[in-house]
Each structure stands twice: as C-alpha cells, then as structure tokens.
Image 1 (cartoon, helix red, strand yellow):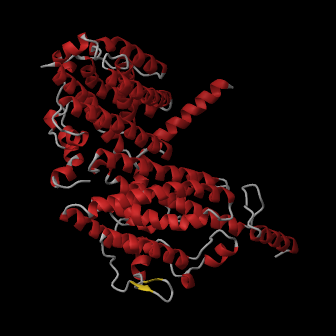
Image 2 (cartoon, rainbow over the protein chains, first blue to last red):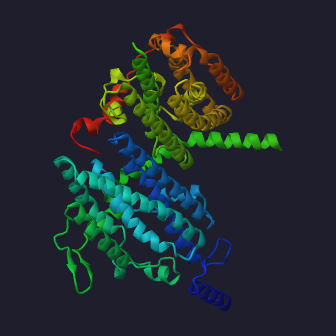
Image 3 (tube, rainbow over the protein chains, first blue to last red):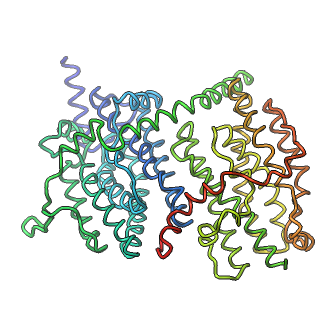
Length: 313
Length: 249
C-alpha cells in the first residue's frame, strides 16, 4: 500500500468516525464501494422478489379493503426497490447490471422470500414478522455512513412500520376469528417465525463481513443484537394474539432482561441461501421470464425515445 | 323496473367494470416489463378497485337490502355481474393490457365527464372524483399506445393485433339498456349511444398519431355478450369468503 493511499484511508476513517456521511462524488475505498453495492442491491432485489409471495394473494384477498391494502403495500415494496436501485446507481453501476447479477446468481436477495405463502394469514405474518424484522434492521441503517442509502432508509422505515401494523391487524382478525382462521394464523406463525429470525443472518462470530461493515459504519448494529431486539419486541405481540411461538426453549430470562431462545436450524439457513429453499427456483424463473417477456416493450420504448430525440435535433 | 332498481343495475354495471379491470390489472403485479410499469399498473388496479368499492357501496344503499360492497363483490354469481366484457379479457401480453386500458380509459373519461353533471348529486360527486383518475389513466395508456405504435416493428405488430382482438368488445359500451330509459330521461345518467362519436374520434386520433389502423367493426360485435373468463376469475377472487362463509376478514 502506498503512503498516499494509507493517508487517504486514514482520512476516510476519521471522517466516518466523526459520523459524517459519504456522498456519491467523494473518494472511497474500492471495498467500501463494493460493500455498499452488494448490500444496497441485495436490499433492492429483496424488495422486488418479495413482491412475488405477497402478489400471490392479491387476486384472492378476502375483502375489498384487504385487497386495497395489499396492493398498496406491494406497490410500496416496488417503490422501495426503485429507490434502492437508484441509490446503488450512485455508486457507478446500472440497474441492468444489477439485474444481470441477480439472474446470474452473483447478487442475492433475502432468503426469507424463498418460502411460499400458503394461506391468507401468511400475508399477515409477512407484514408482522418479515417487515417487522426488516424494519428492526433498517431503523439502525438510517445511521449508515453512505448518504443516499441512509436517506432512503428514512422513507422506507416509515412505510415498513405501517406495513408491520397492517400485517398485525390481519393476524388479530385471524387469531380472533373462526377456528379455521385461528388455525391458519398459528400455521402461518409456525412457518414464518424461524425464517424471520434467519433474516438477521449468521451469529456474529460466524459473520464474515461484520467487522469491516461495522468499522465503516455501514452496519450499525450486529446481527445478534438486532435479532434479540426483534425477539424481545415480538414475543409479547404473539402472546397478545394468543398464538404460540414455535420454540419450546423460548423463555424470559430475568437476569439478562431478555428472551432466551432455542437454536436456529442453520442447516436449513445454508440450504436456502445456497438455492435449495422451497421456492428459490420458482422466484428466479419468474423474474427472468417476466424480464425476457418485457424485452420487446423496453426495446420499443428505447426506440421511440431515440426517434423523438432525433426529431428534436 | 322502477327507478331505484334501474339505478341499482346501472351502478352494478359501473362498479363491476371497475372491479374486474382492477382484478386483471392486479394480476400484473410482479409481471410488468419494467419496475416503473409494474408499480403504475398496480396503482391503476388500486384506483379501479377503489372506484368499485365506492360504486358498489352506493349500489347497496340504493338496493336497500342490507348488502355491502363486499357482499356484492364476493357473494354474487357470474351471471349477475354486469361488467363490460372488454375488461374480462386476459393479460395476453403488454399490448393487450395497454390496448384494453386505453379503450376503457377513453370511455370512462367521457362517461364520468357526463356523469359529473348527473341530476343525482351523489353520483355526480363520485364521477367528478373518478374523472381525475381516469384522465391520468388515459394519459398513461395513450402514451404507451404511441410508444408501442412508433417503437419497433414488433411492438407495432403486437399493438395492432391486440387492438384488433379487443375491438369487438367495445360495441357493448355504447348500447343503452332499455331499463335505463327513465334514468336517461331524467338526467341521472347519460345515454351510452351519445358517447360513441366522441369516443371514436378520440381513439382514432391517438391510433392515427401512433401509426396504427382503426380496427374494422363488424355487424356481429353487438351480440358479443358472452365471455369465457368471468367464472374463472370470480372463482379465484371469491374463494376465501365462499369457502369460509362465517369468517370475518
């Protein structure tokens, strides 16, 4: 490493340590740029792929009100995707490249979306647990060091908190409904609880990227800290619904003032991450197929824009 | 048929048309050719379902039989639906989605404009609100007609094909139901036949500008009142309330 680069890195770290935001035109280490591209694009892809499991129930939403709320919610998620792709683009990569990386398996998305939505309560459980877990993570990301990402988080968090409340409202209706509805609610909680906990990633001592992410203040809290925050917040909510969290080892620990839980099935986690979850292939095939089917539309729009441009010149 | 019953039927026609097009557009969620368009189409779905909700709520009040907008949406059989057959047509490709939307948007703009002057204040107020949304929808669909018409040879071919296929279903927009004669006479609703000339001119203007031909109308179009899609669509839409009739959602 040259002395010049060493000085630059030191200045960069000082700047970050002073809680200043890094902006698109600023100098940044290649690794910092790559880390942000990876994290922001993964976040964007998650928003977009997440439209699939929820979209699965729009046409079957059981009331007009429920249908409108779900449509608006999924539209929000699409909007977050758009917003985040734009934030990633400020780092010098195009949306086309990001989508290509997704299709080639080089970029990831949250593996929670590789689980299927099997009954209407799943729509409640996704809002309550998946958006709830996401917002726990994203609240801390409002202080992330890359400016465009931090600013995107403010808006996204407001909407995600709303989604979480909407999800919980569905769960309340289901948990207090007919025996069948109650059964659907418990079934949904059984299936979504562990995947929601997995959303925070591996334990801190297993997480490869935590160190640099924390040093550069891209990540502001560790996986385990965030996961615990989510558990402590969510367990009483499940109790209020009268539903049982599918963890026989779950208990309040008065010494630590938090809940102790059983161990996550890390084999399942790694299986899903490496492409072997229940819906990985389906999600990716759907995205690719739609992308290919839309190619003629994008070509037509580009050709039309070029013609208009030529006419103006 | 007395005036209340006729108004009920008329509101069902408006409400059902919005409900079904909203359903078709909602099927496009995660299927748009680009993210921006995905969001736009779900947004229009939301507008139409919102309009359906208001119209069917009003219909329920007019009927005065205790049926809510949800009852009317989820607990009626296909044969009782009064929507235009145009809106049942499937999302064959993006050109069909845009073509169907454009033909409907121009019609709804004209219809809501007239309805906003209805002698029924409640209906007039709703129509004035819906008109703002429809003007926006039309701006969007007309822009895409132009883009696809003037884009590439492929997009021109697909757009023309979609319009040709959808065209027969437009005749139904301009047929006055005899049961509504009194409503028309008393200025509650406009005559559908009166909308035709202006609709034709507006559509023709956009298609010509886009390098597309006006499809040919055929004498049989007027009798095209059956479609194979509605039953299937409703089976999906109504699945939960029909399977669990006692549940509240």
